[in-house]
Amino acid sequence: MVKVIAVTMDAHKPLPKSYLIASRLLRQMDGQKGSLNSLITSVNKNGNNIKQIYALIMKTIQNLKIIKQMVNSIDTDSSGNCDEFLTQILIADLMFGKRLEGIRNVPQVAHIVSFENKFKQILKNNTGKGGSAGSDDRVIVRYIRVNLIKTTLKKVMRKLVKRDFKQIEYNKSDITFEQFKELVVNLKENDFLIDYDFQNDLLVFHINSTKGLQELKLFTESKIVMQDKASLIAVECLQLVPEMTILDVCCAPGMKTTAIASRVKNNATIISYDKSEERIHEMETIIEKNGVNCCQINCRDFTSVTAEELSSIGTIDAILLDPSCSGSGMNNRVDYRKGGEDKGRLYRLASFQTRMLCHAMSLQPKRIVYSTCSLHLIENENVIKSVFRESEFANDYSVVHALPQWPTRGVGDYEFASKCIRSNATSTLTNGFFYG
Image 1 (cartoon, rainbow, N blue to C red):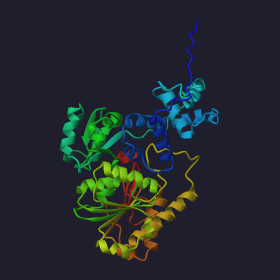
Image 2 (image 1 turned 180 degrees about the vertical axis):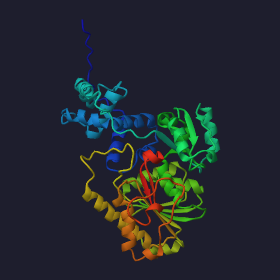
Image 3 (image 1 turned 120 degrees about the vertical axis):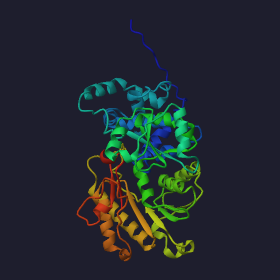
Image 4 (image 1 turned 90 degrees about the horizontal axis):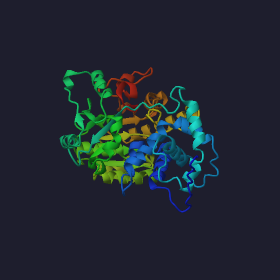
């Protein structure tokens, strides 16, 4: 006899908050309103189950290709209050996660569960077709930045060892960066290393350590921060010293801002600009959690800022410009666009980036660091070339050879290309960034 178990739908039972937050963050990632790390940091409050939220999003990203097939195979119109992002989150948990345990009688969930057999058939049909159950999973490491405002590297490492993490020690003078990469690739789940390039505040873990790290008090108290190494290149290029004045442009959600403040231990003046009110609110949360008190946040279009109004603050030591870009360098980036990158969109982005960099020059800072998380030459080296052709202040500036020890440099037929910096998953074990 076949035993049939009936699941009674409870129209009044709400969906757990973690699923709603995960779907909201997925939507924000789709709109390029922040990286997973920065968005997770922004909701790390009020008792939110960060471990579950992170797991739901990662299961979705890692299996996005096949999840899209599953979504396209069902009637989503009758699913009630369940948009495409929540649908993807629920399918990810049903097929690749905790199987929606304990919530199958919630109306939106019950609708998704009703297609479980169809999803299993799709999964079976895709087995053995070259990894089509997932997307490119190129991230093999987790970088943890120590928040020097709240603690020290030594204190963090001592606490990690007490929690059964193991430090893999090496002497930088005895190994090359390629040999360091071998150490990183061979990390076990609870192993960690001090980073090769940023030895004062950056640790390297196996990617599977993420959930365990998120459970630590060090993380919940923002004494450690999940931040890709590539983001810290900008901070290094600023050549920070105490009491600097820095304009932080297109600043939200504020991960680079917190890294700057950490490096100088709040002993600087950071004036931040971003025109997105929503992202500014996220940044305010992140700034507060990280103990940053040297930052003035302005919800404003940077191109409206004039040299006259800045004259009262004295010399501008540096501008960090991180304008909107295609995001093509971000590993595990959620990308719902069909087909290749829209060339028209790239040209519009490059035009915007050029305009922003020209305006930064017009404010006459001592140094400008231009940053994108794009791999496209048109948004990177080509923007710098355009600015030196178009800006009336171009003669006051030159491209300097940043971080000479960095292995991957700019590309293209430009005389300054070798002075620029690029990073990528293969060569530097990071997200793809450009700095000039």
